[in-house]
Amino acid sequence: MWLKYSIYLKKARLITRRSQVRVLPPQLTKSYMTILTIPTYLPIPEAARKYGLDEARIVAAVKHGKIKAAMIDDTLVIAEDDARQEARPLRKEDLPEWKKHAHLKGIPIWIGEASRKYGIANQTITIWVKRGLIKFLGYDKNRKLIDEADMAYCAEVYSQRKGQGKWLFDNNGLPYKPKTGPLVIA
Image (cartoon, rainbow, N blue to C red; front, side):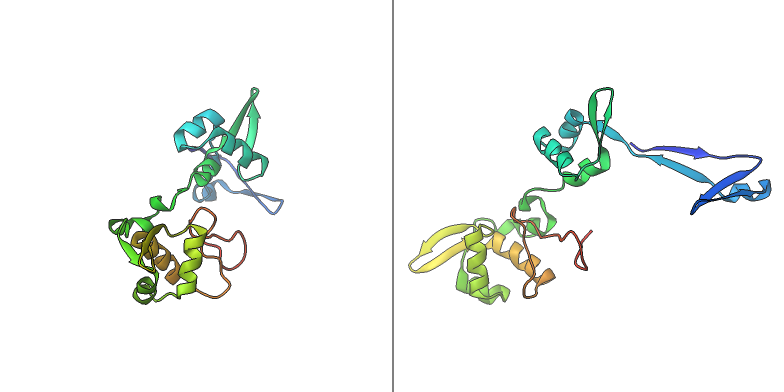
């Protein structure tokens, strides 16, 4: 919950910009409405319950500077916006890109056929299988069978961000999000 306070001065208005203070006449003060927004802070147990996070993970994120924290009456509280950001989906199955292909889950496809169907090199698919991004289902004679839902998900991420030398996936199988630079995805 965001608390918003509107501050309105009737006689004169002080506006601070770049350490300059100006006083405006009363007839112009109606067009200048200052809204003060105060971020909401939650105790760690409440944030963990609300966003489905582990308390140890929240404390680790605070120590690494990913979540803003403060002490209020001997209680550690964290910024709700940061907790919400940290609670993004942690499994690829929760992403909309994967849900589009969920109906293909458990359907086997061999690597050569997947390569032709999705237009991705055999070696790239093999690397994804070795990294655990695509589930290995077994063998059919000498063909390696993989899960088509995982393959379709990886192919979709690949088509959105393809290019040599780019990271496509993080360690959890989620699309990689760079922290800086021109490829930052909001």
